Length: 138
View (cartoon, one colour):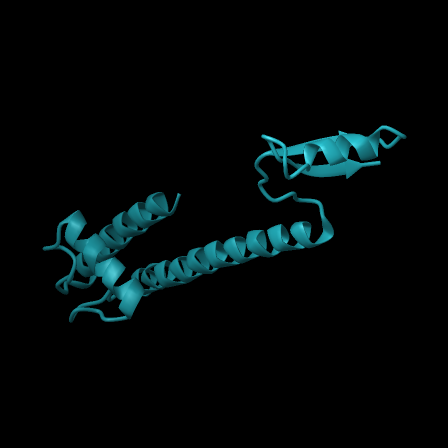
């Protein structure tokens, strides 16, 4: 989605700058640049603010060029916030017991009656060939 917005923004800047420079009979800094060179300029401008000696001359070109840093910052912040939210939610679920950590060699015992203590002793016996962690839901 972001790549599509970048592409549309680049094409719009190139078109509008060419039209503006043709109307006002001034040289456009973008008319000698290829699509990839304009993309490189836009990414450099969006990430560092360095214009490499040229920038849009029309008002609409300047506005379009300013959209890219805003979108870039917004996308980066959205990714950071989504990651932080998921980590906080996982920790919260673990704290409240809604998420069980990965267990190996375990048995879940559902229910409790007079045979449950013997079953648990048998499953957790240190002298047994197999030892299990036992989770009891009663």
